[in-house]
Length: 391
Image 1 (cartoon, rainbow, N blue to C red):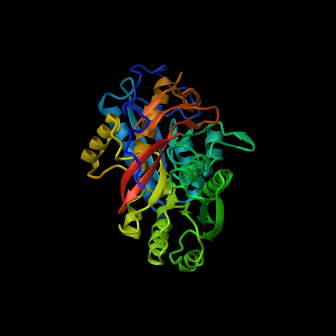
Image 2: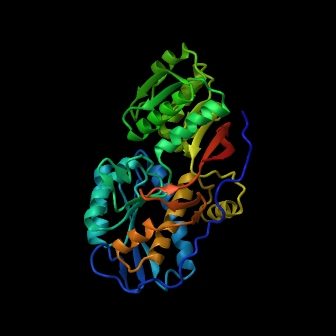
Image 3: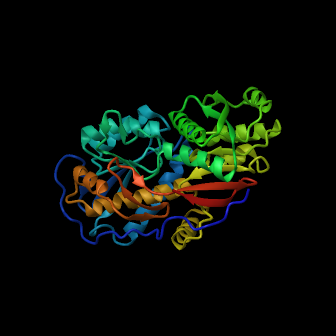
């Protein structure tokens, strides 16, 4: 099936930054983050380890955004200084680094980690320190609010997993005319479990049937036993919520066993490593939900892609774009804060309306989640070939 190329939601990559800060001096405590002619922001990302491509891409986007602001004169003459650490894709390390950034480095706000589990591990530190933490890609439903209530100092600029799973179920039923599905999920991942639950709930509500559910564990490389069991069944689509490391191998092995049904996934597919692991031929009839598409023809997105390629020598993926928007979002909040404290920046983030970035335009809702659109991307020989804005 070929989707129609269309412009996605979003009008400009540039964010208007106030020329004069609401306060020129910092109050003590709560992440003062300002010293002399510098404003310090923390970067706590997965720069090595199993999900390093997410962290590396996010940080490249953040650095591009900060460079643009600094090159334009900074905020009221103050330059943005990034204090950057590698959490090694480990939740305990992410917590340790969050403590260091807030208590020793005195940052005004922290960006990252990229994954939901690692990001959630830093939130208690943010609450104690009264310093906001913001992720561009932590999509688990309970990142910013859970049964205990709102997590006051936690924000994200991406949509959540329930939205992704629900949209892909609708896409399977309505765009692919799917009436039956199998789910192959990473049982060791809250990310995958949340996506799978949302997909199943929506797909069955639309009259679809889940024929079978199979599970694996992060780090597995041989999926032939799972796929052989599925090969003998009849189904229209495969929903594969998980990360690119296993997804690439699963898709490759599924095609080798003769499973030709469309494979559907989520933003965890967005890595060049997916193509390296699966090969080009297996990556046809593959679709995934995402935050941004490089084939978007919106002038702001085109401008961002051109600038990123010139600076970095590669085409930006969604994590680059989310990192870029994250940097602009945090700096925008700093520019609107009543004073240079973590508390004031947190309040400015919560009040955000009409923020426009390359991944879309959004208001921040009462649960510290952005109200924004989603993109469904189709691959042809492993290359993004189609995109459709939904929501």
